Length: 109
Image (spheres, rainbow, N blue to C red):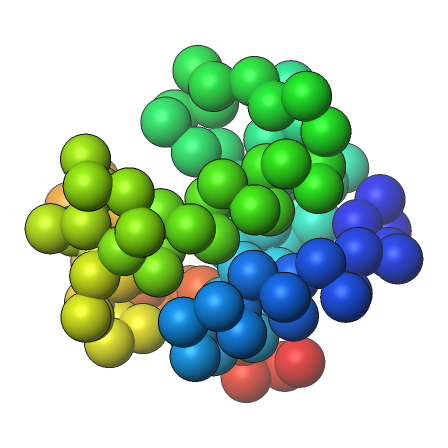
């Protein structure tokens, strides 16, 4: 899997705000088959894949910070929210099954 070897980076991003460590990798599996179909170093489909990142590490850091609620522009969607609520904001309004799909992937980790 293309994201193999990034476990420490995923853990660091999650630890910054006590986010479930499985959330970012599960989103990446759902959005890009674990990075196999990533666009512009963006395995998360962040910003509908319109945002390119300079590296996978930077993508993990930036998307993780957003999901932690550290970006004032997205904090209303993600800050202080449960994992389910974060997923509803992430893509649940477009695909109502999305939160459950990602949660199911998380359970397999």
